Amino acid sequence: MPAHDVPTPSEPERRTPAPVPPGHFRLGRFLGVDVHVSRTWFLLAALIAVIMAPVVEEAEPGLGAWKYVAGLVIAVVYAFTILVHEAAHAVASRRYGYPVESITLHFLGGHTGVDGGPRSPGQELVMSIVGPLASLGVALVAWLLAQVLPDGLIGLVVDTLAWANLVIGIFNLLPGLPLDGGRVLKALVWGATRNEVRGTLVAGWAGRLVAVLTLFLPLAMDRWYDVPADVTSWAFAAILAAFIWTGATAAMQGARLRRTLPSLVARRLARRTLAVPADLPIAEAVRRAQEAEAGSIVTVDAEGRPVGIVNEAAVQATPEDRRPWVPSSAVARSLVPGMTLPVDIKGEELIRAITFLPAHEYLLVDPEGSIYGVLATADVDRAFRERHR
Image 1: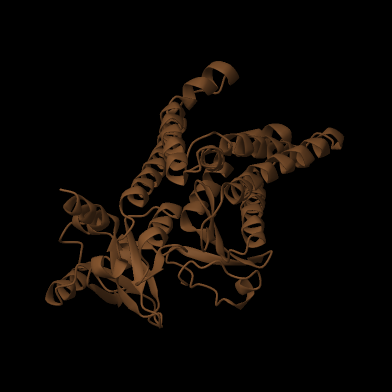
Image 2: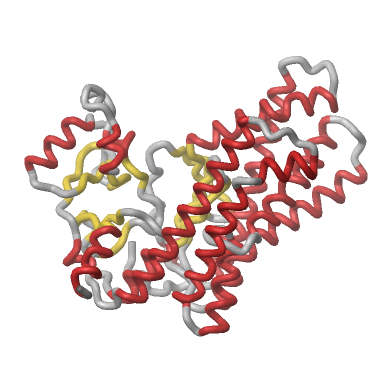
């Protein structure tokens, strides 16, 4: 990945498509961007099919088992609207000259991999708000169509589409990171104070508040819309709240690093890394890493391209008797765009990269693109503490 210089608008077309991470599938291209789907999306599709089956049966009686197929169709249509939301982010990012690596659909929605972060409050505002506005636009079009369509299966699909996009648009506008509305709040505070770090911290605290309130979403749905608060709704609320809290916390940590670590060089903090095939058993990968005195393990595909960073906590959580049979890819975090950084990145540029895509570890590559090592956020934090004792 280039060293985060602002690229020219034509650069995205010249870039080699990134390899598909393990656990993901390439669907094709949309508006010139690779579209990937995570395995977790299929779980969401199955969940939507089960939830919508009784509603489909009521709208179109007598379908039998086909009601589940109709539910899957609704899931696919919903996925396309998520794609529209993410494509809006991609178009805005390209408008400012930032290459877009891919769009990924997953259980909680989607993610647009952009190489580089906004360099002004205006860019931050536009790049973040276009996604929710696109969802609200789809909701409006679907609602208008629903007014002229007859009752039945097609009418149900369009009506569901309208409500789903209305919820997506409004929810994403909530003022807290990592939601789009949090980025809008960050942009506003950044513009008012001329301090990006302060904007991130304010939006991060707001994100934590949104996460706590999300835990009570089932109660609100039960009281105001007569939707029973069952185990599934509580579980989904907990997962969503954890996602928001983690994203907000990581963004705040990155902002603090940016404020306090202006002169750190990634090369000096890199952990020695061992590259292993993604299908190599965990036990053998750990043995080789210990033998090489490596502090991290990177999984590579058949062509030697890095695809993931093995998570130490996940390794420790895997029982020793299973490690000879579990592939390293099962305990590795996929390398999404933004997790690969040049080894000589430093100072403001390093902190900007960490802030833009919060993660526990990042892959460092040399100018030729070869693996140099792994940078852990914990090591960056430890270096700061040691410097300021």
